[in-house]
Length: 353
Length: 217
Image (cartoon, rainbow over all chains, first blue to last red):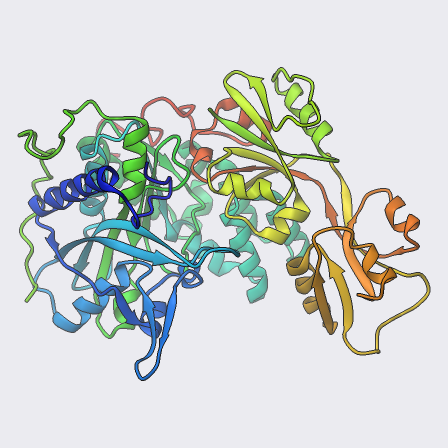
């Protein structure tokens, strides 16, 4: 039995076999799509780990003090390690770099009690020579196809976009502590907390818009009703961009259910554009999450842009165990069943040394 | 089986009444039963307040009804869908009558809500030393452990019986409906209505809810 969180340590034979099956299937699928596997470092300087992580993950980094070496940290996510490798090896990519990885990440639990836990993650990163949404569609479709390849039962893929709410957050004339409280309220989807903050710091057109977006839930029609307000903030084009991504997904993965999370501000300090997450009924956490993060490479001295995602492999195994796909027992090894074809526009992986 | 975690004690009865209004058929709550069948495939689990967000955050329960005092103290990673309007009381500062302990070094405050108290006193600039207690905070000033307490006050009877007075209301408290982050994506319509929110247009079971036009838009 694999724990719901998908712990990847201390697994006995059968859970290990299932975990490796999923891991191998993903790496093979991504390899066929032109994504080359890399092995980012497990142990990194603590400062580097913190620089490359969203603030929310920062509190979960497990650090190690080692005499004569300085403070080190176990990787809490792969993106910062991949970025560290790329920034040292690639001065200017000739085309997009397509990379994939698999391995454990180690996190400190929030609250009291235990020391840390491991999660087996696998994911993809697409790094290009400049920031911007180029490649978002490719990676989003790849994420969707990955879910379908694993034959998860009725996954929901949810789209958000930092630039849909970012301009609103930026325009609110509140002190830093008020804005931090606002982000916390939005992360909890708490309209009451939002109303209390408006009482305390003063309501503004932007907070009222956020309230309406929060009320919209997952209804695109409610977002579209805000067209004039969003246009005034330059955010309507973002909505059009999301619809374009939805069209691409509907073509590539028509079985997938798409949702919208218009006020997704988790990791708002990290993501800079499109964000996406996938959920399966009965599993308590997101199985996949990703998005565009164009701020990371410039912080490492490279003017690159990047988009990527990571899957919780143990979580995938837990979902497949609860709702087994209609596959031969020895899937995917040796059945002759091929993964779904990848989109034509994904070419080989250029630009790496 | 979908599950809602309920807080035992003061807010249990109004929470059960609220569920009854939502169409659930509830059996009598026996003193020691911790699981209650609710009908329609749902069940309720009865927990101590601080445990409700732990169960919901980690998916052992899909939804929960818990006091806002607990939500502020624990800051769980759950969605806070609605203030339910029952279980109302207040988080207050209380202590022995008459004496103002300020100016005699750091205020000693005993509480079951150390993080909330620390935040409140930091905002007010008070110099405090906080003692975390698990129960019976009223005893702390009586036995000299603290000058004041921060605790939930309903009628004020427990304070009076222990010779304490309410000095200041710090926060209003009421029951909230909370949801696991993943379960939220799969809620039935009845819960969207209960939360006073608009759910997805596909009701959670239809095709894509981002309408994709046939031709270019």
